[in-house]
Length: 233
Image (cartoon, rainbow, N blue to C red; front, side):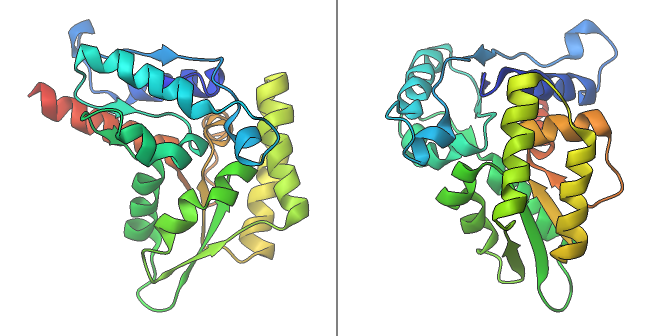
């Protein structure tokens, strides 16, 4: 598990993973190695040109080092880092799970309308949105329409991710619901994709069931458990 981007979100992923793993004894939990590489440079800052520190270099080094342990697969617990996915996969023959792809498959399977297009709101960092990591996956399905927040609402999303969660460890429930409400009601979204693990962390904290969302981190946890149990058996 290539984590630490950020650490609280990685901790949330591990919590969800362990909580969902079917267990009756200690030995039933999954075997995993967690790399909490907290000093990986900020992905969005680099993508937006606000920093020259290339985060992919640190992640590639992790992949090279931990490939020696011959894991069955890698898990990359950062949505924005998937901008470098092809480069990262080239570093190893061991498969890396693609979190945005898993989330979009669930959107299509669960929320796609039988007629007309399904409006899918994307909530993510500015870096993820600019690189079109999710948009490219969503547009592969002709029945899914990508809906992005306007500048003001995107600032709210950025504040929730960086100011509240990353900087202050504050799970701003009020702002989270305000964002979901606006995307659902004012932007007429049928479903929202939580395309940032800090948003997944807030989703876990609030246990939102009022608004329809697909949580990318949750989908990654499900696939991690499925593959790990299949490999074990």
